[in-house]
Image 1 (spheres, one colour):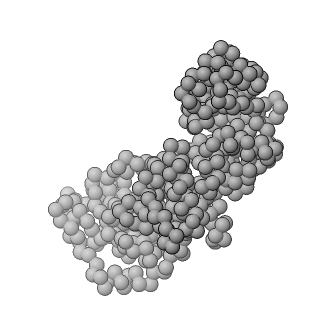
Image 2 (cartoon, helix red, strand yellow):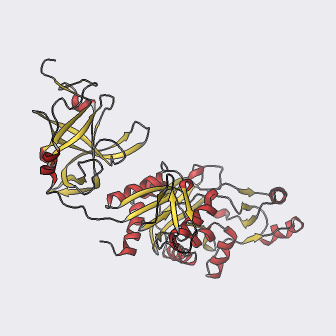
Length: 455
């Protein structure tokens, strides 16, 4: 008890072996682990050991001052933040100095730009050494402005990355978090742009996109549209406006718009000579019988044109069931497709992920027992599969026909050979990254870098 050092709720500390002379820390006994601000985090091998290198801006709101650090990697750990957000972080061990006391602590590395402090000192690091007086601050002193300048004047300018926006609706969605993380790890300035907070000024001379609070978004290098189906119209209008401002969009507004029209998509694909299951489309209930006959009779699939993630897709196993479903959908004035059912596929389909004209990953999705839709969102399971040369050729050709730089191409294996089901312009990353262990989000960032010839 007598040997413990009394500290305030905020203190300055140093990490001598990381080359960090001083950094302000929030002392928080409510937090279990300690965290250090880090960007451009990258694991590497050193003499057969796992290490991690990262950069730190040690002074809040100052991105010009940067220190390059490296340390042995202790662990990779999922950490839950105070807001309930789960994040996988790299863990290092480093010597910390607070006042006259030095000892080793474990630190998780994370981007703390949105936090008030570059360092969070948790209770595990304090245990047996510190006592906290929450009413006090800087009991062990703090550096003067001149001292900070002396410490950090020689720090070098960071390599300037691209300014990239992720235009989407939910920042907590796995795919959106991974894209943000992948961009940050490659040294880019990433911004999550919530579709609903954006609004635009249409003007021949000074067109603008504004964000909640009046911030103008005209200075982006690139935007990654991740537009949910319910926001297609507004999301594509915003993407079109970014394009007018000469911002590079990974998937153009026109490509996304046509990908959301299932019928138009199929017509485009057929015009490119890509085989699909026999499909019918009609508006008049009087032709129900011939429509069923046209696609080979039951069992058959009835699809809502506006459906997504397997919603609005029904398997009609008998002629009577098919008539009932078709007429029910038509009575709602819904646009529907009727499609032959590929029984031999056995509830399985392939998802090929195409980026910049190349298949970067492929998985097989298998439906739950008793279910025919293999969508991961419906509980389908994903496994790694080696796509054939023909399947890859179809996927690349389909993405090209749709003019999509990023596409999730769904293919079904039939007795007639591979058939294309649909092309998705905002394919999810969770199932395919989880199954293949590939950095698909990183490939998306690479496609943007390639466009800018960024090294």
